[in-house]
Image (cartoon, rainbow, N blue to C red; front, side, top):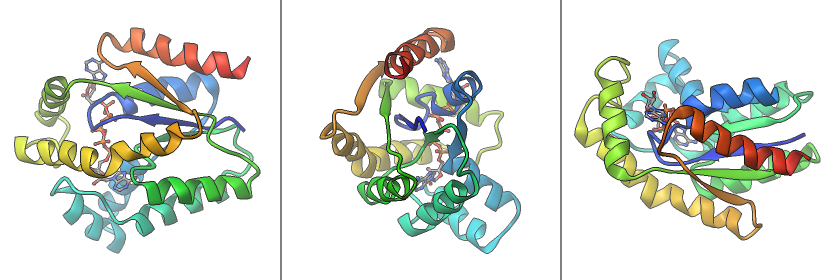
Length: 192
Ligand code: AP5
């Protein structure tokens, strides 16, 4: 199993790059944001509770996302590997993920961290908000709050994986193709 965390702030291109990476490397894409948006669309109790938090730009409680990830891992035990997008976002989530993977005799192989300046992040998210219908994209305050939340709770996830030498920084500004190439270079080095 080859497992990747695609790491980075909101708007850094995790979702965009994930789509191409999972196709190329035949990995199972696991985006907690997408899973939560499906719960919201289905109007489940979990979705209704998550929407209130997401619309403020804050993180959904750890136990909720860890539970979701746990079931997806269990249902995909024969996957070649996973690409985690938007997860883990706290140290508690990282520790829980390591534990879940250990049960499968697997681990995180690399954390690819997309680096994008704050002005570019704001520009990308607000411009997507004009058409996407994503309620957490359309106001400058909510987008800013998501970035603040990232600095408060999520940047330390990179420090957590740095202690195991698993983090590689990738320039996340440029064309989608240029960034994809940089990501593939790092993955290929580890696969060969
Ligand atoms: P989530 O869905 O994970 O969103 P996010 O991390 O805020 O990320 P985005 O999807 O907005 O950005 P991205 O980095 O994927 O960039 P994208 O490729 O889309 O989370 C949403 C919410 O769910 C969270 O705020 C939280 O409330 C909750 N949540 C999710 N996971 C959680 C967890 N683990 N724990 C707790 N709560 C959780 O690109 C953005 C835009 O930029 C697009 O329009 C794209 O076309 C454009 N773009 C991409 N690449 C480029 C490029 N190279 N140049 C120009 N534009 C580009």
